[in-house]
Length: 119
View (tube, helix red, strand yellow):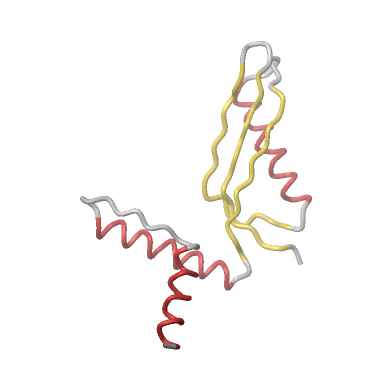
């Protein structure tokens, strides 16, 4: 009975942390990718790192280009992260876009990063 409860507890703990989506044509590749992601998460956790999602939004400045507006949004987002007790060790993914009507545009950016607590 004790083994059964242990197996159930482990299954519940691991299912809340990881999702595995397997496409019919790519079972082996998807399984390998999921294993790599799990390994990276465990490795980061042991090193005191974790993956976090951040997003930021600024007003659009029509006097400068979209590229510079997006760069400014990302720069401000990184400054906000740096001002906290966290430091970024790796940027995993990032995205940005200019949204809104002609009269009221804004710039939104987001990133998934690996962070560590500052010493």
